Image 1 (cartoon, rainbow, N blue to C red):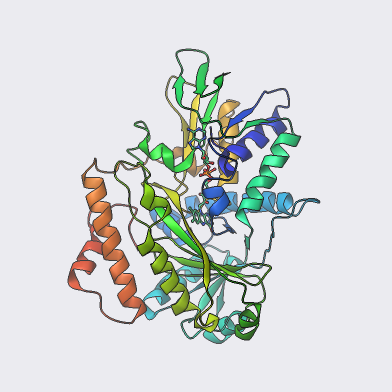
Image 2: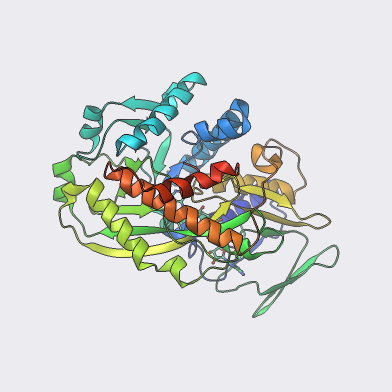
Length: 433
Ligand SMILES: Cc1cc2nc3c(=O)[nH]c(=O)nc-3n(C[C@H](O)[C@H](O)[C@H](O)COP(=O)(O)OP(=O)(O)OC[C@H]3O[C@@H](n4cnc5c(N)ncnc54)[C@H](O)[C@@H]3O)c2cc1C
């Protein structure tokens, strides 16, 4: 269920390992209509998350996640650079840039952690002058160059995966939502408006909508991320020297991230959309003016060299947030219904890992995918509603206010510092900076 990257990588892995299996993908709209077709297109595994994962789960777990991300990156490179696949794959790295004094420590911590764990080549320090040679901006300070990182046109990738799945014999039904499921015994019946699919195994790969499913909602919530796209400004890009196709992002919790397009536009994302009540997606998930305006402000502040380049497109998409910010996978007890979700705004590379895990669960295999960190971590529970919505909204507002103040090198107000500290007080793993 779900024709985004997770569902499609799972279907491909299943047909590759067991060509005799009949694999059907039900997609409510068209493949790529969800987050997979509208994301920022940054392709990176877990090297940049190494400090956080190592702190939460230990150094070995941090390295394990990062090495699985490297395997995903290899597989994605092979797929995206194959003949007849044109997804605008550029593997020129991502610069994680400190864009205010408050962000210096986070970039430094990334560099120090990769050094301490013996993988310094994954986060190469760049001085402010070196950063300016990649892209000139008065807001840019020192950076870490994440070397194993690429960017793609996300919707092209979703459609290329769809094509590859069909070529390998997967049956894909678009505009075919699953509206109900009965799973009494050995098989499950997935009901759609036009008919029923009877399956031995079901894979739930429908992303943020799963946060309203009772059996997952304790560990999964959602908010939204926004993208803005400028008009083509190739001359301006040449003036600021940003012609190398590398991705750029800052070191905020509500991160800003940028890439360029072949016709000289800048696509910029801002992960700061509203939290939803009860995990139910609403209008503001996809069209929230305040969030789009914030993204626009971020663009002007971080890339003033773009001048008054017009924003021609803006859109939002839902992010499935796990209670420890790592994707999680499993099988509901006593059933053959498998789930994979919680990518937490970072899924282009990790959905490949998800596909391998979910295919292994369907095939009943115990291997390095199903025994990985993503399957064995015990997830903390979110508080019930309305506490989750009220608490989440307060922390979001507080962190936003702190980060905006820090961008302007002002001291954040006391209420915001207090609100932003709440997750740490309760030992939560999300909402922490
Ligand atoms: C604006 C934005 C920017 C992002 N930027 C990045 C980035 O730069 N790098 C990165 O790594 N990650 C990024 N992400 C996250 C990344 O896009 C996701 O983690 C990833 O695409 C998740 O893939 P998926 O297949 O699990 O979900 P989706 O792509 O959302 O696919 C789920 C599919 O399920 C379908 N569906 C839902 N309900 C039903 C039903 N009842 N029956 C059948 N089908 C159903 C939906 O239509 C959808 O197509 C971003 C996300 C957003 C929203």
